[in-house]
Amino acid sequence: MRGAPQQVYAGGQPIDLKIAMQAAEWLTTMMSGQATQAEQQAWSSWRAQHPDHERAWTHIEKVSGGFRDLDAQASRQALAKRPGARRQGLKLAMVLAAFGASGALGLRTQPARTALADLSTGVGQRRELLLADGSRLHLNADSAVNLHYSASERRLELLKGEVFIATAKEHGRPYRPLLVETAHGQAQALGTRYSVRQETGHTMVAVEQGTVRLTARDSGISHLIQAGQGTSMTARRVDAAQAISGDIWGWRQGLLLADGMPLSDFLRQLGRYRHGLLGCDDAAANLRISGAFPLADTDAVLLSLTNSLPVSIHFRTRYWVQVRRSA
Image 1 (cartoon, rainbow, N blue to C red):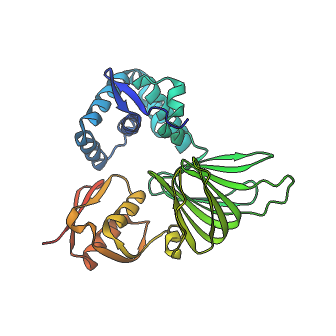
Image 2 (tube, rainbow, N blue to C red):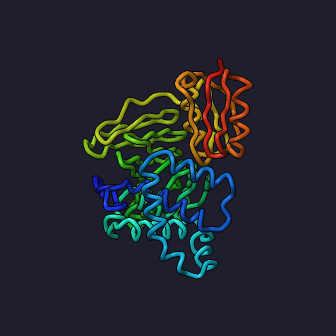
Image 3 (tube, rainbow, N blue to C red):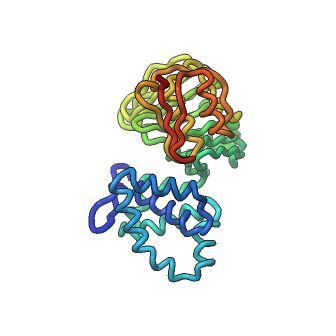
């Protein structure tokens, strides 16, 4: 699966599958008949951001004429009112049909696998659930995971985002270790509570209780991480463990906790809990911020920044926000 091309075609030219999926998301929104003025503005902004966005939209809008031939009310319900997983599956089917990808290619790519994951959360969503073995799983915002439970294994395949696991004791025979697998390797629980976050190029692991064994995918290098420690893992190495703060798990209580965090990092994390574009100019990027910020109201969090930092907040639309350093 790894290394599979992530391109489909629009107008006979390659286009990234992520952009095609975004175009399908906008199509479902615009065909719902319930798009707000802010969503329409965000849609226009998205189209203007890059020529490939406009090309993807023009292509899917043209090809989707077949959807419009359906009864209008029925098609709106099909596209806009299905539960998350079924809606995602329908979006994927639209992409495969409209952009010319074969089913095999489409299902091998990372965006497609994320769309069809066993468990997932959208932007700003968090989930907590009990697994079949009694382990408790927390999914952070914009995350996706597949569950592989059988008589011989307990394996969570993290496709995107971040999870926190409170593992249950395994009493059966043979013993089934609990593993979290990412693109960069495996994190094996040794009776523990820990988080795993997959980012571009590396995986971050933090241990709250117990011990976790990390194994890099390509090199097989393995290290033990103890309670109160965290580290980064790539496909070829596991970095030295370092002491961590419990603040990194604030999201489980609906809080973004910062202690001298660079503003650029703060906004990147906050962006996981709101739709659209959120960024800052270079002059503001290294300003430091501290505090506890409620994730349920990200607009209020943004507006509060001016109370503690020399910055101004610019809302081009509800979904396009820029933080700038004040003169």
